[in-house]
Structure formats: C-alpha cells, structure tokens
Image (cartoon, rainbow, N blue to C red; front, side, top):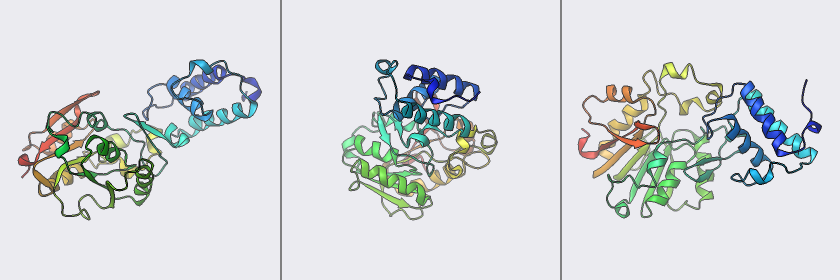
Length: 296
C-alpha cells in the first residue's frame, strides 16, 4: 500500500520510514555516509532546512503536510532512482568544506583531502615556501580550494578535460572567493598547462579498473564515467601523470597521486619507482608520493 503524507507528522516518523525504505531498496552508501540512518537524517534535515548536525531537538517537531510531502518525494527519489544524496541536495562535504555538486561531476571524495590540512608533513617542511601547485583531474574543484587554504602563498593551476566539470569548479572557486589564486584550465592532463615548474603536483584521477567498473553499484553509475574509469588496470591516466611529472616539478618537488584500491596495479605499473605510500584513514594503500629526483 503506498504511503501518503497524512500518515506522518514528525521528523521521527519520517526518519524511521526512510531507514526502512532505504534498507528495503538495498541502497549503496558511499557518497558521504555509510549507512541508511545517517543518509536518511542528512536528507531529511537538509530538505527541511534544519541544522545538519542537530537532529535530536527536532525529532518530535510537528511538520506541515507540505513539508512531509516534500521529504517523502526526496526519500522516494533516493530509493527508486538510486541517485546519490549529493545530487539531490546539490551539496557535498569534504574535510569540513561544503561544495556545490551536480551530475556533471563525481561526488567529492578523496583520501588526499585528509592529508592537506597536515600540509603533507613531513614531506613538506616549509609550507610557506610552496608557491606553485598543479592539480590534475580537478572535477568539482574541491582539492585546489583546500590546497589554497593549506598553502597560503601558493598559486594553483587546476586542470580538467571536461568543460562541464570546470563549470562546477568555477562556481565553487567563486563561492570561496579564490579566483585570484586558482586558475582553471581545460586540458588533457599536461597538454595545455603553462610551462611552469611546480613545487607540488596533486591528482585524484580516474583509477577504477575495468573489472571493477563492471560491478559498480547503481549509485556510482549515476556519476560521469569518464571521471571513474582508468582502463584495464586502472592506471591509464596515472601512467601519463607520472610520465609527465619530471619536467613539471621543481628539483625538490613532490608528486602525490590517489589510486584507491589499486595499489597492486600501481606497483606493477611502476616497478622501477619506489612509491611511498601515505597513511590515511583507510590504511597505507590509497595515496602514493614520488619525489622529483626519483622520476626519470
């Protein structure tokens, strides 16, 4: 029997229903939350324009019927269309930063974001001396915005091949008033990047291998596949990033690349490089670092 708005009166009612609905639909959670309860709470609070970090005071608040109706439509869209919550709310959170997102970009998620507030210590001993950063495959522009905060003296070139992604990145850069420090460049990796020398090259490129692409949950299939697929072993773009880094880095420069669950493929792709694996919340397998003097 279909539900109707008059069957609900409080946030608690909607929360219970949403958790059941999401679990029954076997949704996948990997775009900011990890379970049905957190996802339901986020969507309900956002839809009702309530503080995202304060659920308890509103659990038993009486809702207007049009509010209930609006929340139910959101719950059904998430359950039926399998759309990531970030596309419904047009926002994503990464490292405490809020970003605008829509279907033109993948939902921001990066283990590099965990390392930026630490300014890649101990590999960078003087963050104030970092003056030029190149960020490849920028997507929504989230990482260069975080890098601008962490390295206050740096100018950042942020690159993406997709004009749609760059349009989203432009909006986010403007939201943080960083147009004077972040330059967005449409380019196939290094192709149209100025002949600068960079203290730091950072990238979270497409790295999902072909086998994994075939088994992605429906939520990931809602994202631009060009931003996920990395070829047979996931390393197609990573190889090109590593190959072009040497002539773009300063003598003491660093290359930092995220490869997710593809450590084995990365080590197989670069048998002559001693990759340094950086520690993140997911372990020591997600992000590697190479120094300029290691590169051929």
